[in-house]
Amino acid sequence: MVCLVDNESLKSLLNIDEELNTISILVEINRDEYVYVDNILSRLGGKWNKRAKVHEFLINPKPLLDAYYETGNLPEKNPTAFFPTPSKLSNEVLRLSDFSENYFDDDSIKLKVLEPSGGVGGLADAIMKTSSGFVDLDIVEILEINQSILRSKGYSPICMDFMEYNSDYKVEYDYIIMNPPFSLKGDSKAYITHVMHAFNMLNSFRGTLAAIIPTGFMTNSTKKEKEFLELISQCGDIYKNPKGSFEESGTKVDTYTIVMSKSTLNWKKEKHQGYVNYHTWYGILCFLNTAEYANSYFKKVESDLFLDDAMGITTVVLEEMIIAENKQGNLISVDNIQNMAKYLLRCAAEHLDIEEIQVNSTVLKESNPSQNPVNNTQYDNAQLEAFNTGSLF
Image (tube, rainbow, N blue to C red):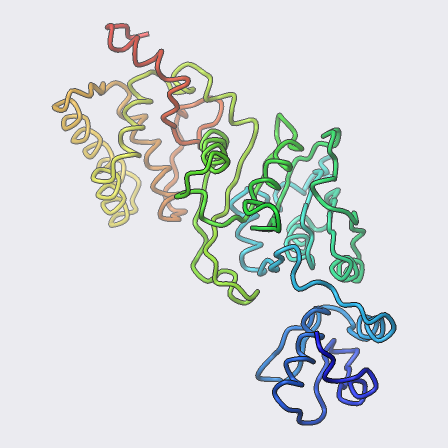
């Protein structure tokens, strides 16, 4: 970078407000000089506020600027592909992962939580606020400037590359909440690499991982992406984040939030994946994977929130679906249709974000009643074969 403004001139150009954590340019300068100064302030962590005409920092910028004057060194321009997690999205990630203040009422419970890419503390702040600080939180961060910001907030970051952290996986976590780098030099799918490393650190019995990731793995076809998608389908769920969720952080990239748990692997290995019988599993599987049934069903339930009416609608829709499927040769039994209807009511409430629908009934799966059935051929072929040969289990 060619020096257009020497340090002495720069000092006279800039006004530092240590209380507001801002730097303003005192005198008018030409375009090339502004680009030069803006590059320095941006790489020190400043973000230009056009309305206020200042660069805003998350911590006091004076020590950062003094270090630059002394050494002439600047951080690389976003070497870790870091984009801060907006507070609204941070809270939504916690909600999707069932990380709730309800867990922190009992003093005997203290969850061990990991934030693998601490950044400037967006997710960490949400974690501490939700838990009222009653968690054992580890934060890993590699960039010195971000480490300084985290310390200024009262955190004690683990200062290292996350890919070198806990490499023997001896430390296990109850929750891992992360916004990993999407792409790095030498690893275009860095988010997959980081999520897989983190997944190995989960507590096998109760651990949950939530991560914000780009959407490419859903459509691209590399071996790494296919295996990653398969793991998510086995161990969790995928939620599309609202468009523009990261705009305030400087990128328009579309993202998903994934939520995974090792413990969910167990119920998928159960007979009928934990449902009361094969017919119930197969019926709900067909329903949830057939848009012509599911879409019309959700529309009908949305139009009337009274439980009795919704239950009636659900039962009728299921009966219509079973008749249509049986005509196609996909035999689905009407056994337990009431239980199937109750399950789908829960799905509707989740899908429409409706709190009024409450179903107090025998659950369909003893192990995890909120989990949707999955078409996992590794476990289902034996069920299909038994069904085709006439066995009713």
